[in-house]
Image (cartoon, rainbow, N blue to C red; front, side, top):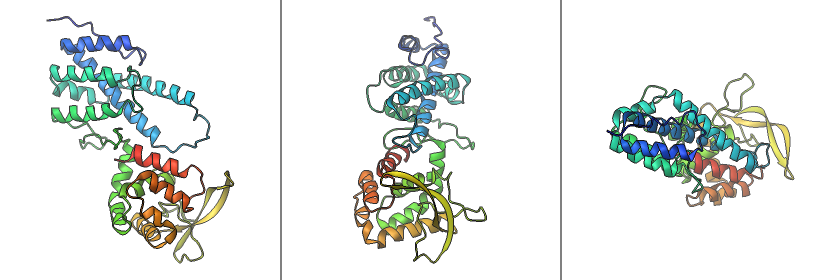
Length: 317
């Protein structure tokens, strides 16, 4: 039996490629210590992907503070190191992998980590995309879904770009998915596109417009209450862009009795208003849908289309 060097990456810098190479060598030996350490590093990758997904799911002001390339680089490095430290404490995934995967299977995953993991050079725009699929296939091969916070085991959801879906994003999508499907029947617009817009408008449901009594207006799409609106109204502070400059105003918005009613009104607006004809005919392309909304005057934010496209492509499964 080959003795393990017991490589421990938990106290090392996340980008230390020499330590990662040592881990790969130990994993090939198939020792229990190497198996545990490899599983821990795999868990660190999973945490890192979740952190990255949560950052991607948060709309950013294109000209805002902290949005420089240098800041993004250091934020990525911080997330990698934080993920490694959290994995050392453990969230349960490493233990699942150690129990279920054989030494041969785990060795194969360790080799993949060398190409896609924390210490690898950024060979692609999304270095965590393949790792997300790798995590799902490893769990599926072992017949072991990842643990969920509600106690119900589920495989981690991934977006079309391969990113692990953040828990609050998944919860938002699952809660409103059926309403979005009904709106899709009316408009022909993919449900995911409308969910993305609702997410952008409400900050994933965390910035809902409130009625005067503090109750939820259920206005998921930021639709204002114009002169022709006969329903309930809620007033809220909002930011409008005039000649490219943000201005804070108090505006009247439509209020609904439920999320289903909000989706129905939004779908009817898109289907019946001629100005949104190109939005309806966007052909299932997220960027065309977002740009069509902005050209039609749906929002005054000059970066609205870019933000919406990013949310749809990077955050929704």
